[in-house]
Image 1 (cartoon, rainbow, N blue to C red):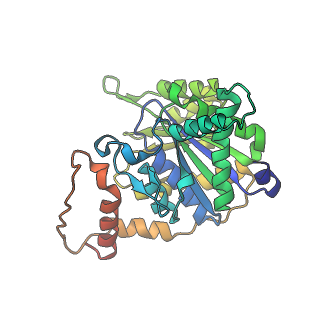
Image 2 (tube, one colour):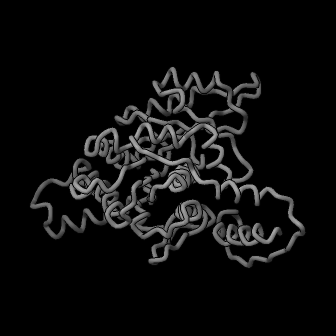
Image 3 (cartoon, rainbow, N blue to C red):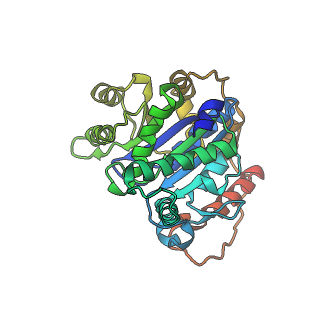
Length: 330
């Protein structure tokens, strides 16, 4: 990791989630990468998963969605497919890290005597291995920005070693080189017809209990979010007003970068990371416009599959077919 510090290779952005799972952290991480790439930076992304599996190859697709296979043969979480589609970059096996990999490596090192008889502990041995995995991707990719998505939900004890590892990154690399993003859900209460901010406030406080104060918060909701509700998050959680960003559920995930840019996300990130960014290029918006354009006809495509109980099981195949159709106005 010292080599990164000497060469000033990368700045690091960490994405966490709270309140509930399935928020779309992967889409948010991919969208941030998309915006920064279109602003002139090189970007690479990685995913930390809490599971004790060594990789995703043995996970049930009907529970976890597709197993995304990278160009170098790694069997990974489906979020890596989102990352590649949004930043248009093939990712290596270093971009997918599960707790099982971390613990397997540490136990193998211990058996070889590499810790010189020391007692093996969560801190520093496990957290050092977490930081080492980030450093490996930074070195291999030579990217300006490394985005790290931490899987799971704040409060899951299985992910505590990842949170402690990314907390230490700010101590190691400084405020100008580390940025913490947090996504949380605002539930809608039918009886009073209002969104409730308290669960997200509590999630941010839970994150703070790990020593991490988020710099930017994404407020996920199925309903429009008012300035009053955004102001509550800013006031009660000590976050800059322009760092509290609403993100209403969208019918089209490829629209998310444009939705975030409406709130000047690239400008906020540039200020907090002391970056000089150009205005994001418009080619992605042209893609979104093409997606929304009326199509001249429909085409039926049959997909033969084994695991049909979950929509995400063959998501990369489906997204590839969609892309082909968009470009042919089908």
